[in-house]
Image (cartoon, rainbow, N blue to C red; front, side, top):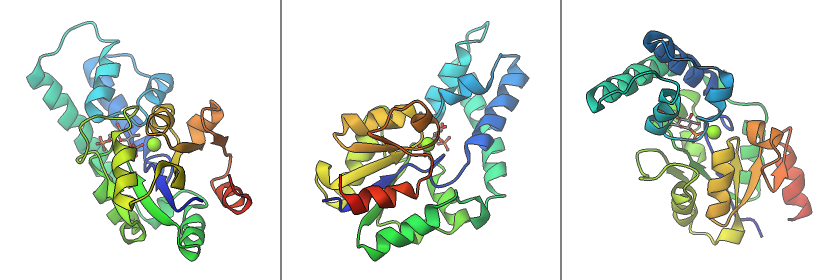
Length: 214
Ligand code: B16
Ligand code: MG
């Protein structure tokens, strides 16, 4: 029986992925590095530093650690400026209704995100209090597809593997869920790539799955 749902944040609860893209694009343009939406898709769910390493695969030159730190800060400043514009309106379709349904059924809710900006984002969209446990990029050493984030979230909820589900939009996140031995509900990019145990066009279809039983 499912007693808890662990949600990824970016691309599941709120669509900050466009802001990530714009900030990385600004950095890549400044450095004269080729960057497009396909490369951006590879950055979903992975940490800021690992994202930069993927972007630098297209670079003609090597960067030292000081330069890397500067680029990470440059990107994050642009990204955080965009986050300041976030409001409740930016919550993805179906999420509020789904959270209400889970609450009505006493199903626990957690966040499992690679983002170090998780708390800022949840504050801005006013959803922080809705979650029983939050694991963000500051609390983990290894980023998705490593299972650490979801193992910590599951333990935070006090549940067994088969009592939880993960909802993810990133292929790396679905892999992390599977490595954590938890079934994955894929939405967005991961659903398009049919990577989940269930691949949903609409996150509200999770209610049907829960009602029917897995
Ligand atoms: P930050 P998620 C991830 O969030 C994003 O998908 C990924 O694109 C980003 O690089 C990562 O957070 C780190 O974000 O720079 O804010 O620490 O999808 O795991 O909620
Ligand atoms: Mg995501």
